[in-house]
Length: 69
Image (cartoon, rainbow, N blue to C red):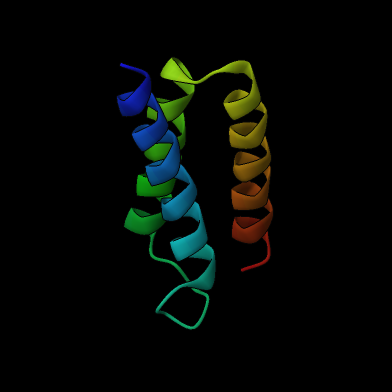
């Protein structure tokens, strides 16, 4: 189970990083933003305390990035 949790955490991290780097000149679509948010939420439900802290940071980055558009 821990391996699966780590995988979800990694997917959330990758989704946020991919969205922020983006293939759309740093302008992610609404679907990309939602996918990143969903990945964070899914990972958060199964995360360790350390991972939860990182997920909160990723979520902050996501919110900041969305405001800058």
